[in-house]
Image 1 (cartoon, helix red, strand yellow):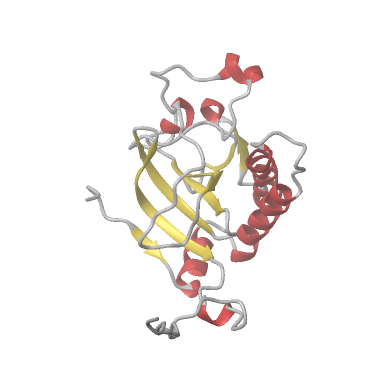
Image 2: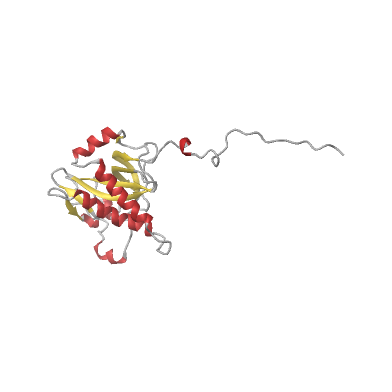
Length: 219
């Protein structure tokens, strides 16, 4: 059981109000999601296997900054984590690819295990600096004992985009290179949950049928 309680904003109206506390809108978060998913979908079969996740991360961070940067939100690269920061609000925002989002029963899991950088961006350790480990970044990776210089003043959230297009803005807590829990989760959008209504009756599963049994006459 999680040692702390998670604040979940599940209803659209509640999510919209909570985002407004950060000076953000649902539309901005959706635009970040759309940009990341479009980039992932553009990955060619000829590209490396990690191309969809890499492209989603690159364009997700770019869209995050394009949507948010203004006089208060600034580019932030503390401990090598690509993010934006609002010092007045005490909030840092990053981007993260996850398996799925906006499920109260099954919290999102990152698409890759994480290391030192992001793990230091929360009071209870956060996550890796990046979704992809590039050799050219080796000289700027933080040491094991590196600490966030703003750790007492800044809370770090991530725009978490699932493979199915679901998206939430959440503040995770990291342990053993995985999400150990969440301080807060703001549900922004999820796919249509009406699974039964989307099934084609001609090709969908059959839930009521009889198998004909024919008894063979004895010779």
